[in-house]
Length: 441
Image (cartoon, rainbow, N blue to C red; front, side, top):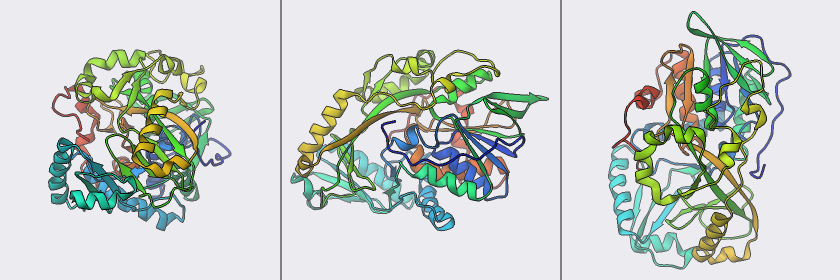
């Protein structure tokens, strides 16, 4: 693995039974398990590789309300409070801080879009501040450049992708839950049409409820069950530079490049939206449903290679429950960073912030971001498979809203009043076209 990640030890033995089995140990899976365990529900969390090892440790770490799609904003707002509450309740450190997010621009159309969102955001109670040219120059003085304007969202922040998911998993285990790494879920069993067990490579867990938070693997897993879940991944690349740059803001987004301070004092550098599309059997199958998404974002996407095909996470193959699966052959998706993107990102960052010229490049990595046709996650019980709750397709937003998503899923599973309205997320909507429904941000 190229992306840094804290590691935890697994529970000693796979249980024979559990009230709920959570499949997938990314940020959404661990928060789901945590909130269920806080309600006294016995949960087994199974992960084919390591907790948080895929996209949950490969993202920017931003936890934002700013520029959220209206469907996700309520969850994003609650998630910020839940990040703070988690630290107070558990004593675990995810690195969360409301450091504020800074956006600068010289593009009139971009500024107009931010202003329109700001009107909506303020009506929903978000503290979002449009910056004049003078204010933008003051906030962005480290760049030494003039700016037409910008946005500052002081109550938004970041958490540390290298330690957040493991920290939540540890808190979950303190509540009596069990975590099983290196343990791929192969499928489910049913009795009377309802889910009755989850079959793993290490044994079968009898349960009436399972949560599928499988990230980039969710759609191919659904295919084994006769469920059509349209999902496609894109390969995004980021890089880091060494600590030592002073007087830089904790975060800075521009159209050319974005910067995020990491817990070691170094900075993560990235180009927002820039990605490679690696063709896969699943991508080809679902591509017609993704036309609205591609029509909106094609300028940021470039053709990739065959790495996604070889990885197996978007296979159309079917497997047997008593045989090794693609998840066991590819424990952790660790795709090759795009060298051209690394060079471009670094060059843009040095041009934007000259102080970075004295910092050395320390790492680069890539991750597969799982997306839905409208850019909004699928959350809800799967029609036709009572007891199976889907929680996938977070479209690059899952880390920031992870606590809110986990709380909502725990509400759905336990029958508690939902923390936010779950209807905009239900996967049944994928039976219809996404034209006019693609998330703008």
